[in-house]
Amino acid sequence: MTLIKFIFVNILLISLSFMPFVAFASEGVKPINLTSTSYAIWAVIVFIAAYALVIGEEKLHLRKSKPMIIGAGIIWVLVALAYMSVNKSDDVHKFLDHNLLEFVGLFLFLLAAMTFINTMEERGVFDALRGWLVSKGFSLYKIFWITGLLAFFISPVADNLTTALLMAAVVIAVAGGKEAIKKSKKKAKFLALACINIVVAANAGGAFSPFGDITTLMVWQKGILEFSEFFTLFIPAAINWFIPALILSFFIGKGKPDPIAAKIVVKRGGYVVILLFVFTIILAVLFHNILHLPPMLGMMTGLGLLKLFGYYLKVTGENSSKTVSSDNHPVGRWDIFSQLERAEWDTLMFFYGVILCVGGLSALGYLGLVSNLMYGNLGATNANILVGILSAIVDNIPVMFAVLSMEPDMSKGQWLLVTLTAGVGGSLLSVGSAAGVALMGQARGIYTFFSHLKWSWAIALGYGLSIWAHTLIVKL
Image 1 (cartoon, rainbow, N blue to C red):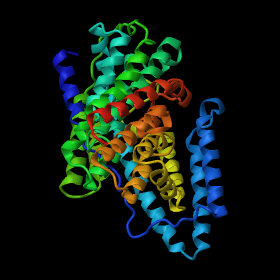
Image 2: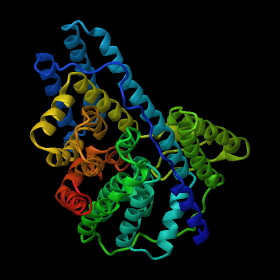
Image 3: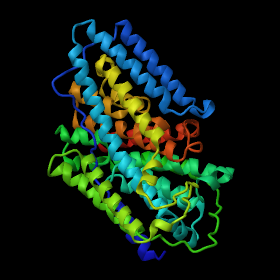
């Protein structure tokens, strides 16, 4: 793969979108404070129990989606009973419809993105990129920094989730594929550290752009901050990524990836798939910004185009293909549904559970109560710092929505601070951001909750220093 081709591929990938994929406001209904009821108390207990099982996934070998899906069902039964007790049953449907709409938008967007990534993997795009990196003699240490830098600078124009998925696919390919990584402790350690670096970099990069994260989009669309004001967060965001990356880099070996014996060639149609992916992302942007349609509609339209291209490949010679993908998944006759089947279904179902669980707790009034306690008792600065910590435990979207709903009287410096902390705070835990959850699925068994938790202290150091830098730059 020539340098020109490599640059061409990366320019295409950097062309990813401004991706607000879900609606975040529930129309016409507000939560009732039912936190003192037994139903609400039991809902919290169920949520904690389900999350505890998620955290213990590595030890229990229980897929993380299972407890969250069950927990979501139980919590919404409790929500329904709680609202029945105050004769507000109709509101439950409105809350649930809103949460389901949020999940469907995320689910379809991710399903399309994962199918494109799986197809590019099957066509050898990432193997070719790995071959280029290896042929240039880059060590694992340099690859660690290259992928981190790319994640940090791509995520402001793409979103942090898609950026993390792309960079993780490159790292896995560089390390030799999932099966080779599982057989080597050295490669597994590199992949775990590289995934942590990618998650932190993608979340930090997304924090200084209105389009880099859903929370920044929410603040921008609310009219609180102007477009250009977000870029004030560039230096704090860079510090947030660079400090933990620097610490982690000392534990990256100086070795190089295994040499590639055979010349890797991108299979027929590989570059067309990349073009289709970029076009699909552009469709999602145009659908949202011009037609005011959900971005996932653009993604699914692009997925339809990919299916048509798959049909073209089949009828023009791919029917006899007996290839095997990098994770030993038999492809056989070319069929785009083979790539669709390989999507990380556990991750997608986990998102369903998280969104429904958090939505249920919000309907019971917990998020509003917590926000009132924070800004009423702690003060804006401490409360905004705590928002980031909460976003590592609970999804940052409902946390930021609760803050925006309260509309606390804060300066623009404080609004920038909460935008920063909500964006990067999720990096403290692997389950604290969509990027982290997605990579736990993509590098299952290697990048885990505990492998991330081991380095949370370094990420917390970057978090604290980024806040300190922001206080020096902007008057709070």
